Length: 240
Image (cartoon, rainbow, N blue to C red):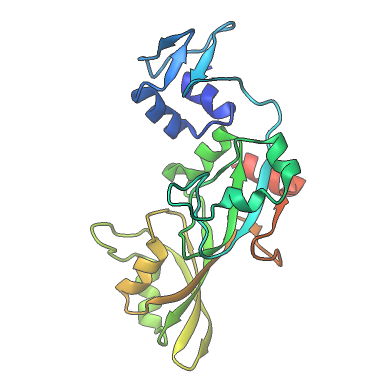
């Protein structure tokens, strides 16, 4: 098994992050710092990452969390802010069995909604790699009444500062007073992308919530609560 896949299968991180660990000399094979990114792990090899011996996990954990605003999508924060793993700490049975859970992708500090956490680095790689164009759906409460012309701009793609977004699915759900509730589906993951897209058409975001991760719906899960993926949801993700 290629070393980056071995590390991902051990629940340390995604394959892309594993490549970074190799480049920075944090991976050792049989006590020697690994310099070869394409190394194939052989039977009997001892793989060490950041000083810890690792082995592939036989049974992975998949958790769906409704992340509130004001929570960091990270396993730890050097500024002492609340992280998504802090929320999972209220479910010790999950943490005890899967100490290396990490988020799939990211959700901004001031954005709420659906977030997947797992110790399956290989699945994380597939879901976050741009070539798979995995869709994410958001409900955005924005300032002003959004016109059809502005909807079409979002649908066709807008410049958010040196990057033109790909086609999106957009529909206005509700207009009230001087605000609009808009549903938007994108398959990219640029930093604060949805907010920047609405800024680009003149309708700044007031509140933003991710309501679906592909075909997996947030549903009525309370903010801060989490649950395991259903068998149907797991099969959907693994068939991507």
